[in-house]
Image (tube, rainbow, N blue to C red; front, side):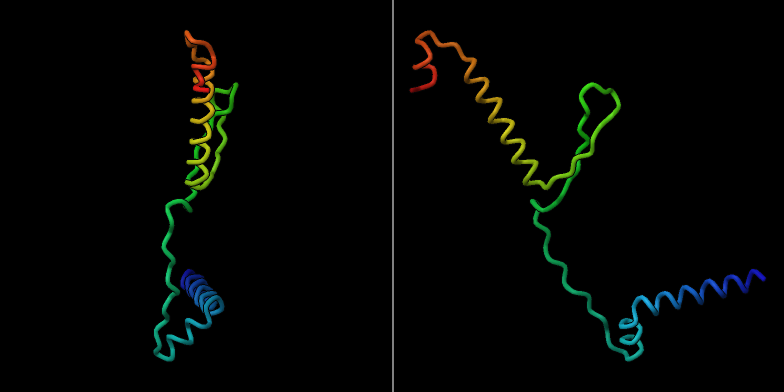
Amino acid sequence: MAADRVLARSAAAMLAILVAAPGAALAQAEGTAIVPPPIPPVDANDKVPCRRIAITGSLVKAEKVCKTVGEWGHLSDRGNDVVRDQADSMRICSGGDVICRGN
């Protein structure tokens, strides 16, 4: 009884393989090798890392944000520019605003 179930499952699995890849089964039967297509090189900027960003007002909740490496770099640069501009605008100079900003 159990052997019949195992045989039925293996027959179903073989049928699924043959239906899913008829070209592969035919090529192997003819004795020719199947060559997979070449995998293109992955650019480091195309990778998509995800970060968990804490939600303001919650101790536990976090949102998963996925962006490419280039997008994360752009956001970091933009954030640094904003903070630098803010720090520059807060600077106090003895000669007045004109000297401080270099105008």
